[in-house]
Image 1 (cartoon, helix red, strand yellow):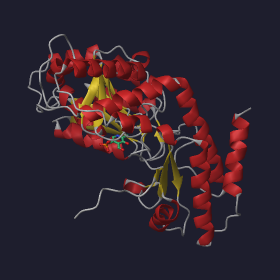
Image 2 (spheres, rainbow, N blue to C red):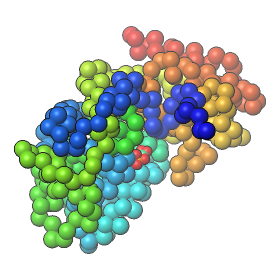
Image 3 (tube, protein in one colour):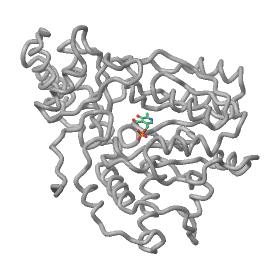
Length: 393
Ligand SMILES: Cc1ncc(COP(=O)(O)O)c(C=O)c1O
């Protein structure tokens, strides 16, 4: 006999999945409907409407594709790139590298624009690359989850458009945590995920394509390589008066996403973004007070994901294991060149609250003290509390 499934309680403060909102989990237990049932189609339409609102767009092609954030990345790139196209990719972390890898698999000639991990991509770098290669597409990560850097977008979007290139932003970590504002910023292509700042389980990737991007897709010379991710086919299922079967969508995940977006809209987008900022400020104040320095450059930090440099002599794995064992708290280890060198603390969606900030700071402080890293008890929590007080005015 196998026992009924039980998982230990966890406070998920890593890079995602984040703690799912209880309303979202409840929505997932709603019974199945057929994939072309008129009542399900209405739920799909609702979801699209909410997604457009949270993305800040009127883009017709705005819907979730099946799969996680990487499915959105593949969808974005597979649909617009044809073999031989020039693509510029900003690489200042792990996920910029992934965009570059997938673009190459689509047959693109990729020109990487590199920056140090922890720093932003500079507009001049994009301008130089555009002069050299006349790209079809310029792609960057809005919120680089491996480094905690929030990439300023406006200037590089303008440069890309001056060179007649499409602009793509990876919004996997930003959607629901910081404004993405696709239309206001003229972002042509965006994708995200459900399991981070939308406080939903993983499994769908909301995408959006501007009319300019759709024109590029409609004028392709070659067929889109992927059937599953072909947005011209997916559009026939997600949009219009007569819907056509494409693949069997997960009803449960659509229910979940719809509810998650309702939660975002009910809270109010700007209130939600400020909540993330306020908690990140307190987390950083507490961390710095015990000698943990943010790895992302000041002024360009992702409020939903803080990277902290691990002090010399402190073993990454030991601390993370103890955090889980003793406190039930998950934080993330470093990715790529940050492996073993940085921790990634996510305060995403529902998890961005005072209780979690004080809890994780207290737990880290306690463990650091225990291994002989000299920290005065209560320092981190006091500094965070002071930051909260300051932000209360
Ligand atoms: C910025 C960014 N892009 C893409 C991805 C890939 O998303 P997923 O793991 O959901 O496939 C992630 C995952 O953490 C991410 O943080």
